[in-house]
Each structure stands twice: as C-alpha cells, then as structure tokens.
Length: 129
Image 1: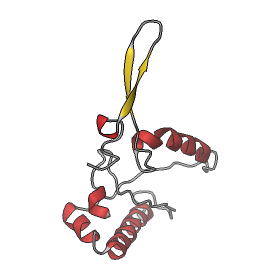
Image 2: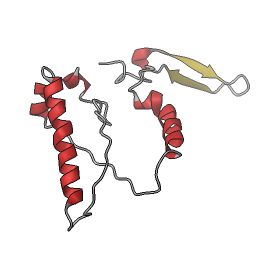
Image 3: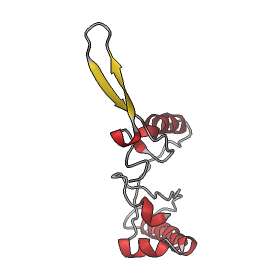
C-alpha cells in the first residue's frame, strides 16, 4: 500500500484527541503529506483554484478527460515520452477538430493539457511510475 492509499488510516499512525471536560475521545490519523494526495492537498488546491479564477477570461470553459486504456497505460511504463506525447497530440487534435466544425462551435480554441497519474480512487500511480 502506498503512502497516499494509507493516508489518514491507522497504517500511518495517529494520535488521540481528548476533551478534558467531557472525556470524549477522537482518533486523528496522520496524513501522508504527499503533494498528489487529494486528502492532504484539497484545501491547497481549492485556494490555488480561487486565486486562478481571477486570471480567467470572461468566456465559457470546458473540462474534457482523455483516458488511456489499461493496455496502453502499461506500455507507458516503459515509453512515457512516446505514449504521453501521442496522448497529448491526439487529444489536442480531437478538441481542435471538433471545435472547428461549423456544425459544432465553428471556432479556433485554446487548451491546456495536464497529465494526471492518480485517479479519483487513488489508483493507477503504479502504472505510470
């Protein structure tokens, strides 16, 4: 089990917080403090997003996710530059082609692509190391 998977579980240890008045006890497990962990970095990510919102243009934004099939993700273990380069080129081309279609948006668009190696279920990191 990775540190991220063990975040805030007894696997990383913890401490007991106790009320001196009513004797209520609460176990608080330690966090992994990994910069990729959504549990640890959630507040920092929200703060960063709020600060970036001030930089946005007054236009519509869309979030699209492109996922590699497991078989190709395994190949990426050994050929990261080639596989991820293809993923970024193919996804950008797909977005620009669809957006340029006059039956759809009929526009030239800009995009930012980010490689995520952890899924929301904290899986897949072992495939991309």
